[in-house]
Amino acid sequence: MALIQCPECEKEFSEHAKNCPNCGYPPSNKKVKDTVGRVNDTVKETSNALKPWLMLIGGILLTLGGIFVLLSGSLEKVGYMKTFAFFFFGIGLITSGTKILKN
Image (cartoon, rainbow, N blue to C red; front, side, top):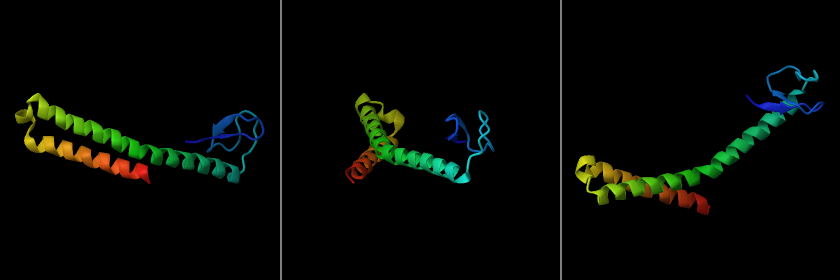
């Protein structure tokens, strides 16, 4: 549920409300749609900006986890396949994240 700002009293209220609860001003559908559109655009931009960084950080953590298992001597407990899967999946995420950030 998005909040919109009343053009009359400048208080925020739900986009689904028929009138502003503070002053009773009826919002026009165009203003509501414009506000919701701007909020959606901001969310998409923020999400797209964070994806490569999350991939990069996740890849580093997975790679470090694989290295930790290799160095800690607990490889037999965890298993070779799981350890190398974490390691190479982490490397893949790092590579993908850096490619996206370069573009």
